[in-house]
Length: 82
Image (tube, rainbow, N blue to C red; front, side, top):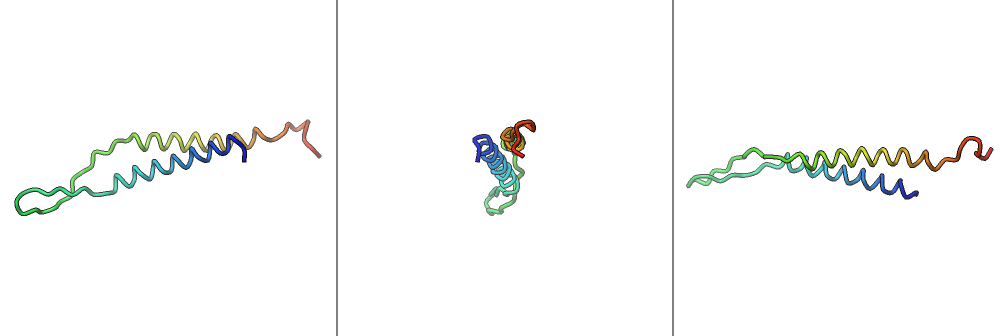
């Protein structure tokens, strides 16, 4: 594997992990206990979109690096082995 492909794949994996963290954090309910009866209810999250933005950017950049790295390694048509 080439150097650019390794970086592209690792950036793509990082993007998937960050998007997974954001999704898990958004889906996880928080429990709030209030009053003397200790009744639990769910509260709304204030989710920071930072994980999602960084994850999406790294996923797109990683995919672009993988796609361009494979083309860069190919020889020119005039120098290709026939």
